[in-house]
Image: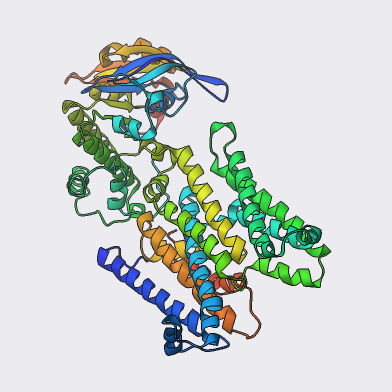
Length: 342
Length: 270
């Protein structure tokens, strides 16, 4: 099934994905309710554009495009890292409860935080929900990591089970809060339970992107350790990996990357699952290939998905989490069914 | 020289090793033998530095293992696990590269990889998927991964030992001899080899020294002819064991199959 593993093939894959990313980025900046031609985009870039095209490009589409690339790439790297660490091709950042924790914190603030929000200065308000999402994700991460490390041994099985339990509890509490919410709160909740890039602005995008990029770059450094984990934890230890420390560091970095992403884009599923899978199936299973190629693939998937949700039924916007599932689900199923080797 | 002194180990509150002492000098093949549950693999794990001991110590050279990082431990010994696994769709070449330390130069890696693959009969097969190989070939592929680490660490100036946990269990008789011949050749080059062996005949033929364990305690240590005796083995394995010497001087160790032999003799035509 894999098309080839030669360095020439790899170079071709990199060139193809980077070209596609460039095309997707151009389309993301150009296509929308107001079409901007290449000439108009260029005019804005060199400072001679119209005020309207400047606003559309720099204040609306550019931060959204940057966010899509950063979230797509970091979700893919986080997914590839979790799958490598757990030696489980179905592992996903959502599996350890980070996404659920972030969503729960936000839903909690939306439904029950009115009095609390009124007491805050106005300039802080736009940051309240992203910060709540980040703190929710971080709180779950700390609980999950501490529980997994009980007794001096870091148990990945316990990590997953606690994550599944937290996801279930968070789902139930979110259900209760949704039941208690009014119409306006419900609309807000849709964003935080299905994901969207619509709330992008440079203030939130800059901070979250720096965090996502740093965490993803640090995860890229664990290529060899993730490869050695494929031999089992004992063999990885025999080969010189400090297993408990590396497991903790990778889980913490995944939590930071995913938490930062959820804090500005809500929960977006499937990218972290599909991008690493496609890389393993078509290119190589070694992590020095899986991590960077998955990142490029994840960025492409999210950019095209966002392009689709913005333009499918204007002026309404489909939540991007639904789009990634609708586009990725059948394709993923097709891949699984036609490929026995996983 | 790798040594352990008065090692005690408890797992889940249950004592597994009770005051085990032994040493692995460079250039010697030491076999760990004993019945199931005797503590062979646990002792090997202690010598690898995997467990916090309940008592005693393990030293690599003059350094206590507890003071070494995982990476420093890896320089002193390479290990072939009892049932090596691989969760990813790696090629043979990718698997073998995993055994090499990061500080090996690319030129040395290429040279060592091709020589190790050739050494184990995988010449020109580097691009094959490990999952597509037979069970025995996969086991040898993991041995190649371990041997490239051994060669690389020794090339980098470390006095690296080789630990093998039942390396012959999934191999046919020809490959068993082939692997153990290679082990002897490595010992002749100065490598200390610790090998867990269930097959007492192979231990008698290939080891310089046998450590016989029962219930977490060393029953006897010494040359194979002194340890693998009928009396000692019968007591350790709780079954009557015969030790004979073939015309070529080779020890033949086998259980007395009284009832089984009678059944075979009763078959028509026997």
